[in-house]
Length: 418
Image (cartoon, rainbow, N blue to C red; front, side, top):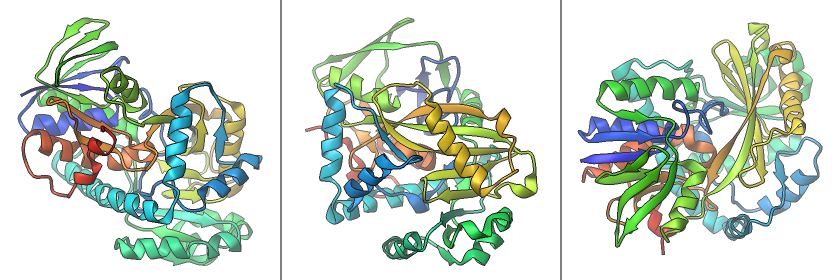
């Protein structure tokens, strides 16, 4: 079948790869000059199924108020007149209950763990390299209150069979030796040894090459203007390079998917939440992280990617605003310099932001729509890199009329397309 994938980020390219592997004729459209030049470009670098959790949970509204008042707080809200922002926030608040959190978490963890396994299999079969490491994630607690508060998280990890290690300061230093220089700044940690790290942009670039070898066509510098619907089918696309036609279409345009879905009268509650990162050349390898350290106080992930340190974090709700705010850079710099002083050449750091496509409940939208030839693969939020391979393989199975390896019924867009 001829299938057109809209979007050339990590979600779109992995989708194209597994569709091609299933024997389909695939074309990828993207408005940029190459793959992974938007949200997939400089994310935090974590492949972290252990942290696959909804943002909406019990206690989050009160925590959000505290974060908004912090100097280096992890949350920023810049109010706009966009009604979709307020509708999305309202739906998120409705999911901030223990019952909804449990339901949504149960939908996310199996996909995240499956995706990591699919990524491993892809490495084994293709030899793809992307500065990957399989050395786990260390969540670092700076206060006893934070450490005492992980009891609920540990119970959730036990419930889903996620391996974990509760560590004292010495255990944290054993996992991340550079922390010995700042031993007085933390009281303990929670390590998830099954997590991985890797450069999402490098991965997507190299997978795109493997796609080309499998017959996938990439049409870059192509902006989609309109999606044309006739009855219960998509018939064509109006683009900057003329009309495009296909037998089936996959919407993998991240935060921009929502606007196109509204245009064809099938709205989905996907909204952008901006994240920031800095990429810092390593100056002293012994003073740099080994894998990923999550600074619980500032909700910042500090990740080793080859000869660089990627520092990512912040949730900024400000619509599609891609302006870089220096206050966010200072937060990222503060966290990494505080925990890994001397590890990176901060003056050479590059600053970036991207728009995470978030659903209000947490799980992504993967599967069929009410239109017979339109499929969704979007709404992964902060877990796009973590869930990319699994979501793509699941969707390729669905489109190919095969039974997916995991139960994905509850990930279907029908929970919103009503």
